[in-house]
Length: 169
Image 1 (spheres, rainbow, N blue to C red):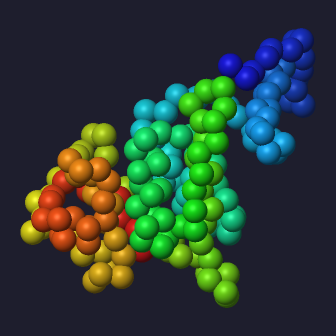
Image 2 (tube, rainbow, N blue to C red):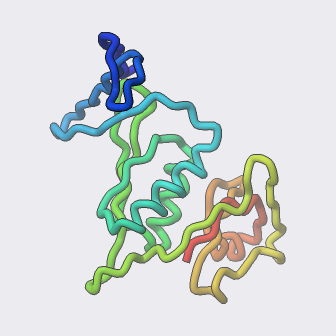
C-alpha cells in the first residue's frame, strides 16, 4: 500500500533485487509515522508487544494499529492507572492508537510486566470465583466479558467472569 518499487539494484553483499521505498504517512499534526504493510493475525499480542518494547526503551509514547479491542484494553489500562492517556488518530487505513505511557518522578514505568494469557490457540476463561489475583492484588487482569473489557476488580464487583486477556503489574 505505502510501498513503491524502484529500479533494480545491488546491495552491499552483491545481491540483486528491486529497491523498495517505504512511504511515510502524514497526519494532521504534521508528524510523520513510518508505516509498513503487514497483516496481523493477533492484534492484542501486537499491542502488548509494542507496549512491552516501549517500556523497555523508556519511550514516552507508542503507536499501535487501532481496533476496538485494543482501544478497550487501553481504556482499562488508563482507568487502572497504568498508562497516562491514549488517542485514536485516523489515517487512510484502519487508524492508529497513540498510547502515552506513565512514569513516576524517578523515571520508573508504571507497567513492570504485561503478559498475554488467553491466546488464539488456547483460550482461557474463568468464572468470577476463579479470577486470578495478580501479584496479590498489586496488578490487574484484563478480562473480556459480555459487558466489554474490564479489570478483574471490576469483574468481581459486577460478579461476572469471562476470558482473561492479559495480566499487568
